[in-house]
Image 1 (cartoon, rainbow, N blue to C red):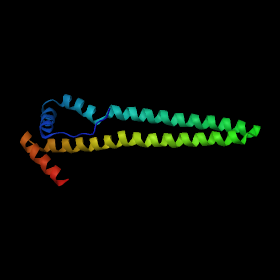
Image 2 (image 1 turned 135 degrees about the horizontal axis):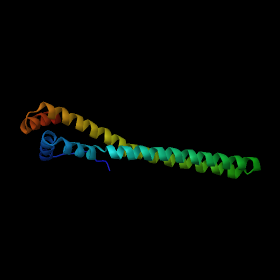
Image 3 (image 1 turned 45 degrees about the vertical axis):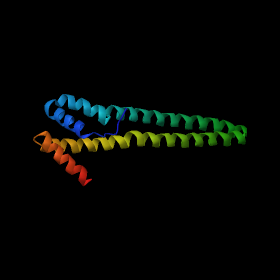
Image 4 (image 1 turned 90 degrees about the vertical axis):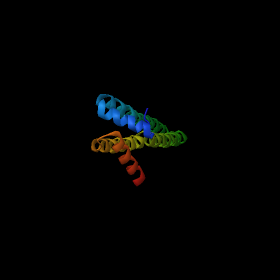
Length: 139
């Protein structure tokens, strides 16, 4: 599962302390929230959708060739209409999956890059919170 990150001020302070004091725990948190596992799942699912699209097109080609040679024009047209409807549905599903996974993943990557850049510059939690608030007001 991938999450769109939205931390409170207290949670950001705890994340900063974890980043400074326990980097291995911070990496676990980052991987969980950034969704690197979800990205792999999305890519695996995308490959499966492409394979399935190819299989449907291949079946449609074989079926329509059979209908064409037998002169069943109604079947020939119906096969390609069904194939087109399936491709539209699969394209819509792929677009929704892209929005739900890829775009959220990119926003989370930007969050962690900004967080780590400010955390490296800051010497303590108070400095980090001041810098973070200034960054938020600038956006």
